[in-house]
Amino acid sequence: MLKTGREALRSATEFLPFDLVEDLADDLVHYPGALAEVNADRAERRLGPLAFLEVWVLAVAALTYSASFLGRAFLSMRKRDL
Image (cartoon, rainbow, N blue to C red):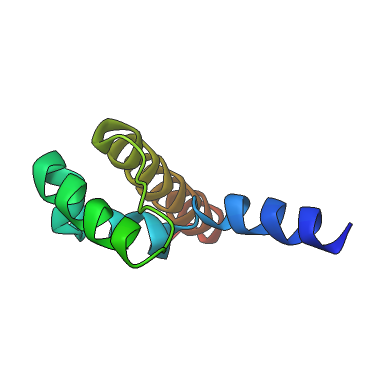
């Protein structure tokens, strides 16, 4: 049961802003050939393969976070009427 909860938490943290921006900045996201080479090397060392979400999904999620934070800032400033 703990293992299932830990995996669910790990999958939920993939969409936190820091992880999204880190994944978007990773070169392996943009070069599938390089990712295949790295995964082949990892398979030889008996490690699990690296996997990333599609670039457009990462970009949309990052833009959604940005819009959310800007919207909150706007509402906060509007409430203060500065």
